[in-house]
Image (cartoon, rainbow, N blue to C red; front, side, top):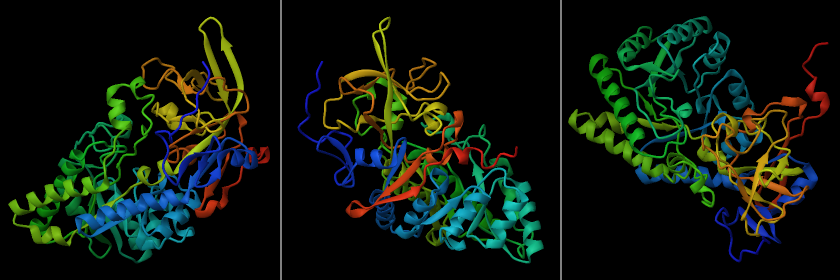
Length: 472
């Protein structure tokens, strides 16, 4: 069947950002094929205007609820230095998860008071780096960790600011591997330990400043209820500790988890299980999350006659995916074609595998694919799509046949070798997780700015980079 031209902009388009021009995918006014020619593929492409737009959406939510807010971009989603610079210039703060991310944050120009530090297995060296830097908060993952922080503070002769990360057994409709507030997860301090953790944190006020509490229900959470339940739980702990000790906390950290709509184009949605559709197609607004959380807390505060405490508390959010996911995409070239007469399948073999899109393998995560070379053509022909790795699992479908990804992808009829495809919404947890499996040099990344200015923000690795740390 021959492809027909679609008159209007396709469902995946975002005006001013992702559009079709001259039949090609256009990114903030820049032709995707020109980027592929200049920088080769696979290629990460990020949009600075889209990052800023996503951050402005968060700020608008804060203005809507009229409550003190602090947004800390979750750098684990993408800690490229140019991305961090763009986030900083857009006016929000940062969450880090390791000494390396702390190093990058400071190098990118974030002030210590803009940084919070998460993590389950912080080393003594990482804790000392955070304490020495004087960051806004170290989010404590266990009672044992309080002791490590005290020791570092004592050695350095300073006072460390901490928040306690709680795990209150709150489930969500996201992937089980992305849920972080369950007792089966590795994160946080359980409910039976919370009061002991508070008391332990207040034992040496000359070394420890207990400034907050933290719950993160998990990533890509499609409903407001888990956020509201988390906030209510934290609020109850805040009131309890205030009544017991007189200590007032400065902030409640709701973590991240605000979802991204990966199914703006729903042409493949019916190929996904219902719960996957609900999660991947979530359109939950940050303002909805904040209103629900505050409503739950205010109800509890009135019951406890503690509204005055709530008004003093700053709410923290750690958005990662919602800032960067739809602000990035991957361009990949079809390098090989195969036709299987036994199954009547046509295979497209690309140069982008799970070495740069790990979530597609780990979580069977759906990234919508379009043909950047013929973006305005009808995408109605079915293909098996796979990457270049010497691994049977390097495919764009669920090889385990559990239906978590579509078996086929819809692209224009007659796709040939050399055509460029784009995997949309792939800015989060891709660049940050890539690795050089099969001796494949890691790809370049560019940032597109207003006016179509293109900035190289990561050079493509060379073969020499593959052996730079080997000793032989």
